[in-house]
Image 1 (cartoon, rainbow, N blue to C red):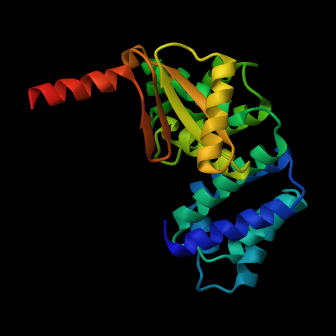
Image 2 (cartoon, rainbow, N blue to C red):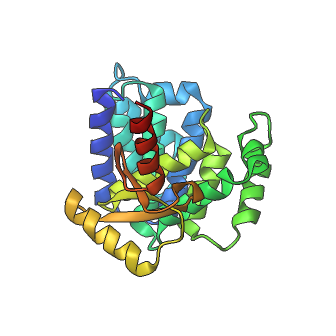
Length: 260
């Protein structure tokens, strides 16, 4: 990510924070992702920093005239910023759509997205169907909607179906994982993925979350993966940090020392 895009993302996120957004705004921003992502001419024109900002703002008004004032305001900010390239602009609008969900949806969107990722990972046929480049996008959306049903919130379903419909050359799981990070950032916290041989009790989860929150100086949400290969103990990953207290790792270390 270039420095221009980093600055543009920050300014666009600030514009979103000052707007009155709801799930409908998020839906509109996802529609803008599809429009810009499907048209290299449109995304290129909006990202063309050689053009006057006023001209780009006028293009937003013309193309997205049917959207709400809040969505148009955010998109005008996007168009007014300098992006490293057109692809970054499209990705930035998607980030803003996800942030809008995080702002307006009260449910545990990070946790629900994580469970969706697990469902896809544990069903190779489903992952293949969702990732097929030649498949009908609407049929993919219908498929994942039927599978998830009412098990996730409206906001989470909006993120999932939007990414499935328009993955932009990405694996669906990778795109959903990025969405988790965006939601967490918007809500001022970070995500810890915990691998354990057995499910954690709610009390254990809370103690672990409190301990990690003190360590990292911000709220930490816990996503648990039950992994029999851990044997005992837990393995915690937060971004690039790994805290490995699993018995399997200690046994591997012991075997390595004995072999050496």
